[in-house]
Length: 65
Image 1 (cartoon, one colour):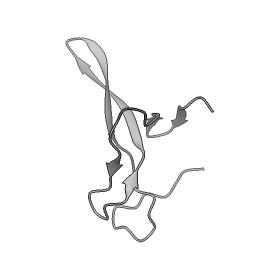
Image 2: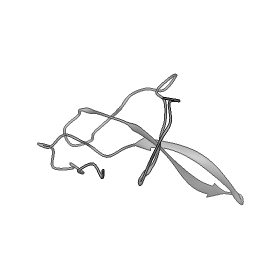
Image 3: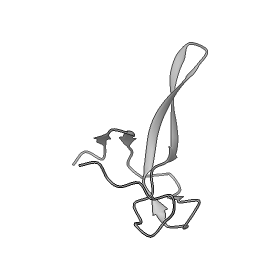
C-alpha cells in the first residue's frame, strides 16, 4: 500500500504529520480526505474529515464497495 487510496468521495491521505480528524456527531476518529478547491485559478488541496463509518452514529455513511 502506498498510503493513498482512491474513493468516490476523494483521496484518502496518509496521516503522517496531521492531527486525527473526528466525527462531529459521535467523536470517533475518521479518515482524512483530500478535496480540491480552486483559488486564483489553481486547484489547491484541502484536507477535510471523511465520512463516519460508525453504524450507531447519526452521521453514518455506509461504505461503497
